[in-house]
Image 1 (cartoon, rainbow, N blue to C red):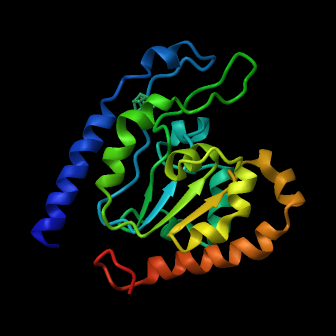
Image 2 (image 1 turned 90 degrees about the vertical axis):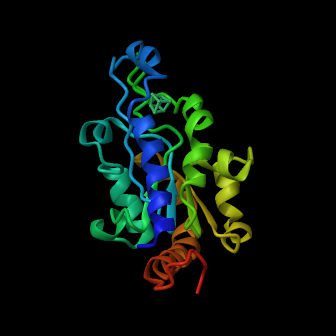
Length: 215
Ligand code: SF4
């Protein structure tokens, strides 16, 4: 490893250490039905070439401390064509949600949205500390809004995937069970999008050129 990549990892480690100590949302979380403490779930190294930009940890991930250890993760891994060992290879895959902590449930037991203060506080810094990313997967509307600067509904952004894929970006619906109906109503997602997505992910992860540029 060169002295430059060590420096990059040192800078990333410094940011990650600050996020680990972050308590910005402590009061907000204490007022949710789950009354939980902040627990940022961080999964990245400076060498990552695939970025999965998600929404926020759910309750199971809050417990496990590892991203996508839930049925949404199983579906996402299937979409990407990745087994767990490749999906969780931090040297190559960074997982950066729009909020690092579980936002909690409201009084009706529904998921609360990711607090926007998290992305405002940390996202730019984290993304610039991942200089080798060459393909970005945007999981759900919150990540699409931030990364694409679009207010397009998720369905429209995903339907427009051909426009984004050559720019190194793929918008996806959230892999939650709540979107099973959407997946059934939009069979083109499985037939047209997933084969391209799997090929792109394989190409990026298998590439032996580690300079951060496509070979
Ligand atoms: S969600 Fe983000 S801003 Fe809020 S406490 Fe967790 S790390 Fe801090």
